[in-house]
Length: 113
Length: 113
Image (cartoon, rainbow over all chains, first blue to last red):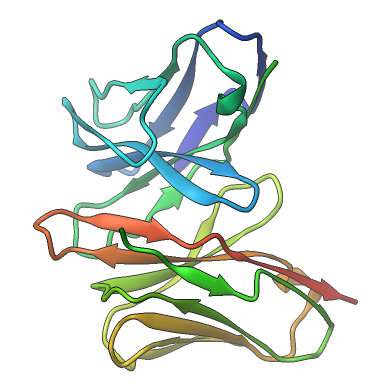
């Protein structure tokens, strides 16, 4: 199993550009998450999904959109990129049980200039 | 808002020393997870503790969940350079009929050979 894969690994965007961060998991997990990690701020939840076709906002959803058309894929869309979106983005997945143990991807380092 | 405070934020020790890091909250959690994150990678789950007072051992790492399920500690015996990384705790709350996972900002550990 590859686990959780994310692409790209690195990206530089200009202000106002858009892009999609890709996330795929091959563990048949129901739950998937997007986090951003900034220095000294910990992991902040952007969006999550409890299954195909179902998504919900997390703590910091503004400026982002998601979709979940399949169990495996959970892309994160940035529209009109802003410098405040410079961060490291992690996708994670977990089984639908009471423990919610998360498996993380390797991350995407995004810089908006 | 549930908050998890981790201390210390930074720790630099010599190889062979023992250390303890703490994760504290005023909220009760259903379970608590510990992750280790190495530079340029995503967090990796180390352990989940579920029962108040529970102690789990993973080789030289000992995890304890507080009796009231509001706090946790991680003790490392005879630290090695391979233990270097960011240690994150995450509290899981199932009480609202849905799961909420809150991450602390982490303890950055450096073990000097």
